Length: 182
Image (cartoon, rainbow, N blue to C red; front, side, top):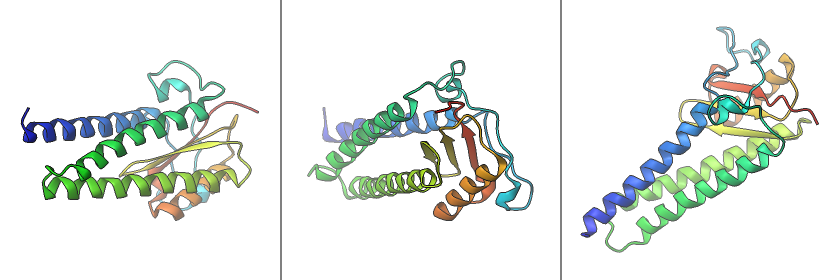
């Protein structure tokens, strides 16, 4: 196989992996989102119905005990694969400058994304929540909190934390409770 074809295959796999990750994030909250009034005021946060695992994967089962840890393990494995692919592009002496620059930019983006998710998860947990997972995409952020339910005040607090950290509009932040109670 020629070098050009190998590069195209590697880039194709990388794009497919990123699309798969985006799809999982999208389907996770496709039917659940926090709605806000027209003003960007965190006190206007409205709660969503409790999230079921069906939104996460395919649409029918409740979020189960251990989901948060399992998701983190899967997220890390997926990111590790993506990083490995990108690093192979960067370290390949046959990669052209454009591919290397693109791979380096994507590596930096993945590192920033991972750091932002961890920072947000830590900040939200520091407010007394048992656990949470933050999903960040280009256009929005989604938060799944390990709680039976959330009050409007708790949802507003989470929206405020996410908005400040990511500098995104409150209307672009969705918050859901797992429905689990510890």
